Image 1 (tube, rainbow, N blue to C red):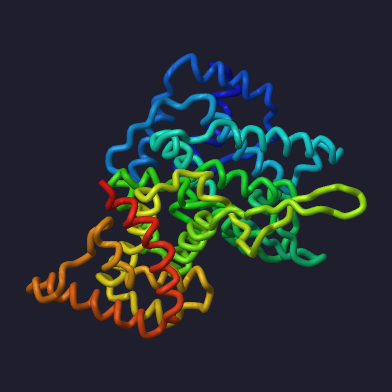
Image 2: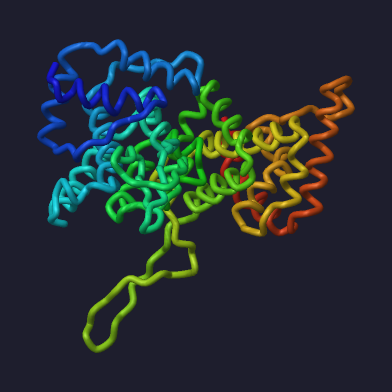
Length: 396
């Protein structure tokens, strides 16, 4: 294998997957990607494959990952270039702005190369993007005669005269970025539907949970997603982000009418009504099973929080945003959705012991939700969302 591939994997990819210090060098070009792709195909890399498998096992117990291929390599190089574009010493590489615009274009192409056609491919992409969005950078702030000087993710020169120093650890994704990196971050997230599923508040504009809905038919993955949402301190915001994106995806496309422009004889298309601007559901797999899988996962999130005795406390501090209100209303739809999705719990009268206690908690939680939510929110969902899941599913 080429030294280029070895150096890239050992210096960047493997430390990234292992949660260690990854080294970011100059941006890599498309020609280098092609050369590395040929080297990657020439043999197995046990260390890399073990790291990928370990990362995947952090999500599901028995992942099935194929050996890494061209698409995964393109994703790794794209992630590296996003960081290189944000490097504080990048003017030392190229001074001309046009060179960096070319890097941005190549990086966007690499990030968009290949989409996840099945769960295994999507899982492999999350193995790369998941640790990327968790990246931390250790900065050193040095006090000098001129004032404070920050070394962003770099060692402080030994001969630097300083009167004091402090280290700061920052979450890379949360800080300000170079313009090119900022524009590419949504492309990184688009590349991994599972990462967006696990962190819906980070998902880019236009994202839809219907993109990962078929993966929820994998029981282990569905469990992992629900518990990832529940583990977040902002579980209500996460549920609202998923529900809001689902609602926008299911909104009907804007209908258009043809009208006359007048003396010119030109004709143009204008909206026929006030239909919301949204991605049409037909762009994704939007059948009753897929919609039901998303809604069922969100209801299960409520159930987990009821078991943790943290649901009512969270609802008490909820915002007035429409997506959050729709998410909070879902437990009230559970009886209507039961023919398709089942029920979280049987009626309390049929259960005893711990199960009876949980059933009573669930019933009390639903009553609490009904008290704090506007009734029209619940009725709107009952009239629009429930038929998308129950009527079609119930047909023979």
